[in-house]
Amino acid sequence: MLPRVKCFLTWVLWGFCWFRLAAAERVFDFSTTNVGRLPDDWKPILVGKGKPAEWKLVLDDVSPLIKPVSPLAPNVTRREVIAQVSRDPTDERFPLLVYDGERYGDFTARVRFKLVEGAVEQMAGLVFRFQDERNFYVVRASASGNLRFYKFVNGQRSVPIGPEMAVSRGVWHEFGIKCAGNQIDVQFDGRPAMPTLNDNSHLSGRIGLFTKSDAVSYFSDLRLEYRPLENLAQIMVRAVLADQPRLLDLRVYGRKVGSPDLQVLAAKSAEDVGQPAGATENRVLAENRAYYAKEKESAIVTEPLHDRNGEPIGVARFTLKAYKGQVEAATVGRVMPLVKDMERRIGAARDLTE
Image (cartoon, rainbow, N blue to C red; front, side, top):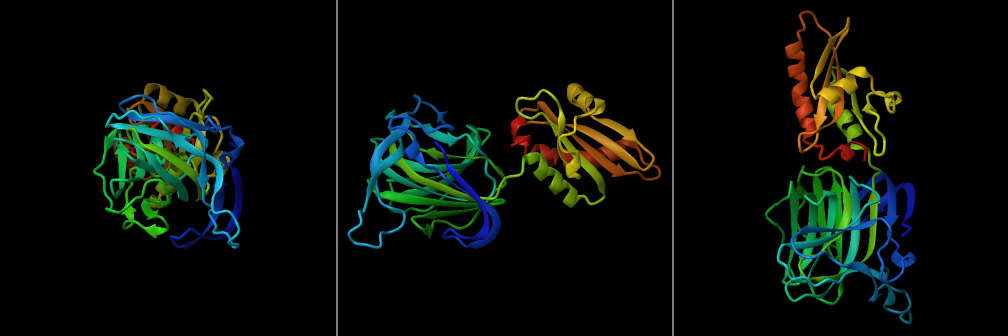
């Protein structure tokens, strides 16, 4: 699959509101992939129990996104759509299909879906800000007459929330999701479906498709408007420096995918990004303990950064202004809350660089 991408500065209307941003557009075109196969960069994932899902392209009649001007124009076009066609009725079985090519932070997404069959469930949804199979958001609709939002955090599913509403089987519907910071807006068939949600669990991640149990569901016309994403290291450095104006510098070190070497992933000065780590930073990561150094006009605290499992995966180097009578314990104590807040946002080592 070769998605079409273009960047522009414009006013974008997606049915939620007008907003101005330097945006990119991604339209997923499945026509370049043969029927019976999966597009490139799409990864099937099974959450919960049961047999693996079967995702593939099938042909189906799809109405055009824009209503034809001429009454003589065809009302539907037969073309490729993504389908989940396995029929395992296991209750806690959630087949996902995740786009593995890019992560998104702030975005507006739309996708069309059709509930086709299912003896136990007839359901379809959109997964977003997907970290891994234990951490993501989902909005899904069911033919039993409801629309629900919930999240997975460390494998624990939240209580579903959302309205009761008719969701017809055998016709195309549309989800709209807008994420801006910790705010999430949901549309169904072009209308707001629930009040704005506020949640800080996942601030970026991948996009994907969702079904449950034996639901046979089709998906088409997935498209996104999104703000090109900073990596998590850059986001954290910017946020900490904005909140702590007395910090002279902050650098976050990590390893890029495929590289064994520790390097600067984000810093106050963009010129420092990409520089190799020094002996102290490598020692902090290897020994998993903090180092303190006092210079004439500054104090430096270098701390390990840990993932959700407590494994050291990076280093944060804080440079603070020195003062008379400064002691190590007080300086390290000032930095520790900042480190803990940063670590709450890190799921795995790759999060720092993506």
